[in-house]
Image 1 (cartoon, one colour):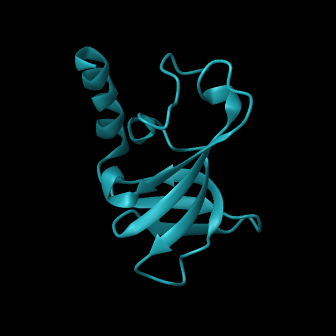
Image 2 (tube, rainbow, N blue to C red):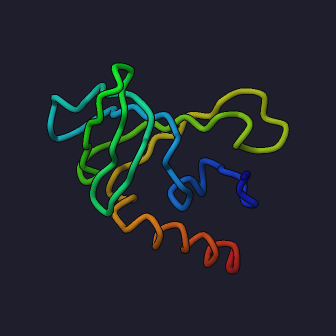
Length: 110
């Protein structure tokens, strides 16, 4: 089912991240930098990413920087290509359900 609120670069941190493709572009743990795959789970402090070898990797949100791919069909109306958004993991530190609830506040005041 499609979300009523489109995923935009400006509101990505308030959306469900599971299912999005991701790349770790920077981390305090150099062995995590360069990891790419699809987000399959999320906790308050971690993203669980499945890589191309179907291996599940746990990546801490804190002190990591991510590049998310928003598929064209989930982004702004009329957009014909995917959008890539760079996000500091510290902005994602929250229980997913609480972070997602905040979009209602943003829409109310925005």
